[in-house]
Image (cartoon, rainbow, N blue to C red; front, side, top):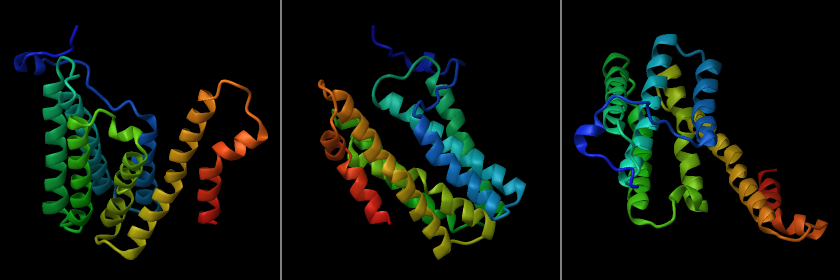
Length: 211
């Protein structure tokens, strides 16, 4: 049975759809929270940024459910709520706090999201399962680091972008690690020491490059 509903039913109040990728939560909120705390951002502006980011994060998940025709009952109402949360947050950050440098962060994030939506609609393979898609997702999620720095300091700096780069490099190793584990599970016979070196070669090279 297809889980597709008419527009009227889509606006029934039900359990909110939330992203299921636990790694994405970590990559989104860890840079956000740690930078806000380390740079002593004010509580009010920090809460507004957190709610704005949450609206965008949850909203993209609901949108992808619609694109893939997997939206359960009530998704339309929650997408509206997420969109309003994001829109109101943006208005407050720009009008009340005059944090216009956030536009430099929001623009590439919007482009990445648009590309993800296009691939989700027309590609047979989920974009977040490809290597390029996962790296792009990490880069997009980690943009919360410079966004938090802007909220804390009032402007976009080289330090903020440097923090973003460090988080991308840190989280990037997880892509190679997960792929290594998947390849290891697919091997039917026992894994020898040579197999471990072969399967983990990408991860080894990556960390050597970092060093």
